[in-house]
Image (tube, rainbow, N blue to C red):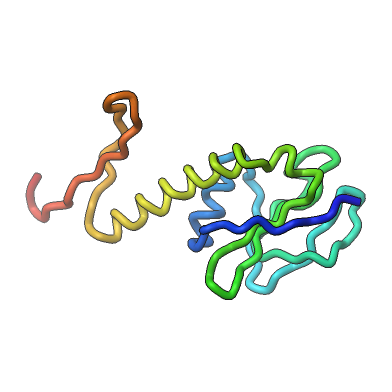
Length: 138
């Protein structure tokens, strides 16, 4: 039986975390106000709980559930089994963080009145471009 461990994260925006999980390939993600039990690869109910859950059948064969638990400080800690840390490792979490950060940045910029213009590569680095929305003009 593979034990679960919590990985500290900076995810705060539940909707953008779910959207980021969708974008990295997890199309079925559960969202629970009250944390629900996670299950191991044998279908055994674990003591660990999470608010955002990707069930094991969507993670991969012989996988355990992947979860994110809402913490008192408003962040979502990742709950990952030792076995699944082979797949959900630093590289995977770095990719998720990148997608999440871009989504939160876009949401924040649009909330401040900026419009997403697209992406460009400048000096070998990806830039996300925004412009100020001007009423009645360009």
